[in-house]
Length: 310
Image (tube, rainbow, N blue to C red):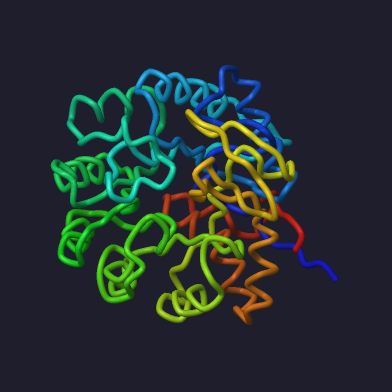
C-alpha cells in the first residue's frame, strides 16, 4: 500500500534524464532535467554544477536562472544553484577536474553570484581564502557546505565556526576516519546538517547506520544525481568528461565514482530496509532540506502542496 508524502527536495542534482547541467546549451535541456526529476517525485531541487571552466559554468548558470524564473506545473521547481566547486581540495577532488580547481576571491565569487541565484556553495575549508569566503557567502545569505576536503579536525571546525552550516555527501571525498576531518567535525556539532547519499554504492549500510545514529534529526538524503539517472545503463556526459553506468554505479574511465543514478524513492526503500523510522526518513528528503535552504513551505503536506507516493 502506498502513502502520500510531500514531494522530495533534493539539494544536489548534477543532471538527470540524459542531460548534464554543466554541459547544457539550451533552456529546453534544463527543463528536461526538471521534468525527469518531477516524474520521480522530486518537487524542488538545486541544480548542481561541478568544477569546470568559468565561462562554461557561468553560461550554464544563466540558462538555469532563466528556467528558475518561469516554473511549470509538470516540472521540479528550481530553488537556486548549488556550486560544488571550484574551491575544493586537490587531495580530494573526486571526479572534479583538478585543472579548474582554484582558491576563492571576492572577484571570482562576484562573477558567479552575478550569473544566477546561488543558494549553496561547497568548498574545502583548508584552502587559502576559504574562511574569508565562508564568512562573505554566509553574510550574503548563501548556505556554505564543507566538502571535497582533506581538512583536519581543527580546520573543519574553523570552517563551521566561520559560518558553514552543512557537509556535502559525508564520508565521500573526505577522510573516512570517524575521529578526524570534516565528517567527524560535522557529526560532533548539533547545529550542522549532514547531507549523505544512501544508494548502496557510496556508503556501506554500517556507515549509514552509524551516521544516522549520530545525527538522527539532522541527516539529509540526496542522490548526487548525474545525467544517466533515470535512464539506466550506458555512457553519458558529465561536465568535461564521460561516465559509464553499470549495476547501479556511475564511474569515470579510471573507476572513480561519479555521482549517483538512483532515485529518492530508492533511497527511501533502502532506509526502510535498514530499519530507519518512517517519519525521519521522509523528513530527510523533504522538510529538513527545505528548512536548511530557508524554504520551510516546501517539503510539508498542506493545501495545494506538491506530493508523491512511497
